[in-house]
Amino acid sequence: MAERKRVSFAMRRGMLAGAGASAALAFAPSRASPAVGEDFDTFIAVSMKLTGRAAFDPLVAARLHAALLRADANFADNMKRLDHWLATHGGTPSDVVTAALQATQPDLAKAVGSVMRAWYLGVVGEGGQAQVVAFERALMFDPVRDMLTVPSYCRGTPADWAKKP
Image 1 (tube, rainbow, N blue to C red):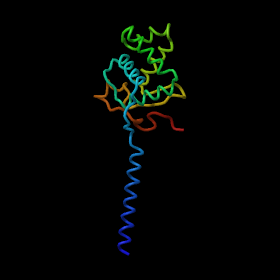
Image 2: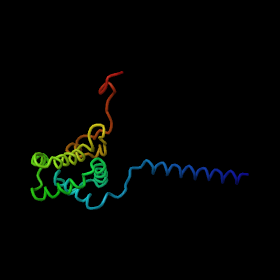
Image 3: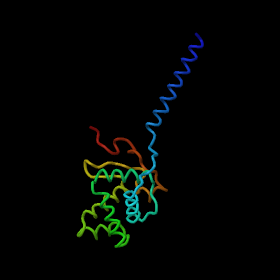
Image 4: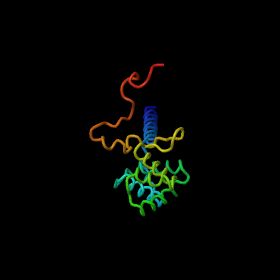
């Protein structure tokens, strides 16, 4: 009888350990390899030219790229056209590029805005279709990251940010 209890206890302990490991994996952040391919490379090249950055977090880049592709059926094509435009007109700050494109190619000007909003705010889409893809890793926090803690939640009491019902 004692042997049977030992086996039963060992089985339960093993099942609990397995369940715990499964739960941990289910809620762990995805570390899948970043997207690869010509469209992704073009997105990164355009992003580097528009932001003036030499590198990006690969996980954030993959997630932003996937979300931008879902949000706009013409996104990949617009990135190719924009990459060509930047190659022939020079990589200048995004506001100058947007102003130059606004009159002649408004769809590319909008694509510039989408890319910049995605990187700096971590948001893809607009209005009710907006999706937060990256918050703590959004580029808007980089200038102050060394001095301020990036907020991951609303600080203070509800009285600081909302009225009582």
